[in-house]
Image (cartoon, rainbow, N blue to C red; front, side, top):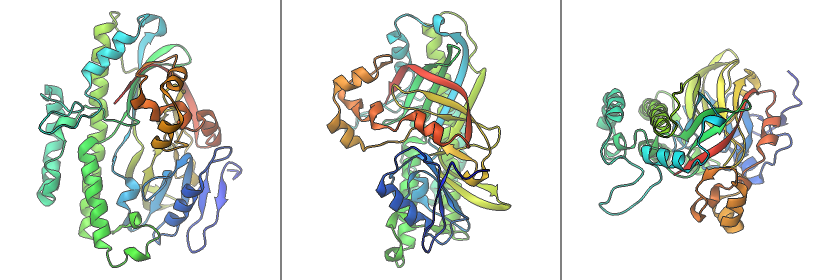
Length: 408
């Protein structure tokens, strides 16, 4: 394989960094953060950096961090198991109603989304009465969760059962899309919600507490880690695996609700799972690479084993892609998880107006108010440049454009 599509960055006292960022901007702070991570003593071979790379907490979003004998909880982050699910239907564009507001409204009613914080009041992003389907899904997760909460009781009083089948806030979304053949797809982006956040936060704290004597020697306190063989390492692997399963189930439940909601608006009978993909992009798991078993942390990256399907969303108003992995070992068989931000949410809100948002999403039935300006397409990298930079990591199977977008 030619090395022309990645840039090699040698790191003094660390492992090299391979960046698939040709033609895509990489901020200096993200570069510094990558170098800090590459200096950790347990990094295996090299870091692989995806074209959507940008500054994150502790470790850079858009990076693949292979480790041996240790795990960094902040590298996995707090939205454990965050990822995408997509399903192709038998519908085409002409089967959709002329006015898509009713479809958007039906989806918004079917899936709790957003967040409201009021003392004693219900969070609008959680179920008030958990539906039977969510309870059934929770019962399959409850036993393992009890094992975790018996050891860590503070995780018990979290939004868990009431968040199963709900969307969340920020860059999480539900979309109705059309592919290159005008076929209708449903696609959504979410993770392990409140309980995953609580698990991530707890273990990041524990790692920092365990390393109190050594924390000053770390390039960044958020690179605190657990060593294999320690109690907290095993407990974290167990908890993170559970949160990843919760996230996958969460997406599957929402997809079920979205399809049911669409059927109330679209009177034509349709099949809904002709092609389906459900993939994480914030997670850790054991994998074989270069003849060795390693822990691979993908922080804002998707597995792209040879032939494996994945999803790379653009942004509100930009195209998204269903891709097939090319199994590029140099990238630890990975690809980007999206376009990647070019600016912070705060900066986007200062720079752009509601009018800018309305213009940028003119072709999409979606919210167009000041609370979603931070998600404006111009706050993200150019998805076409991002896709070109990773042409040796994935091939495009379908190109999607959204016609409806629901934001939390």
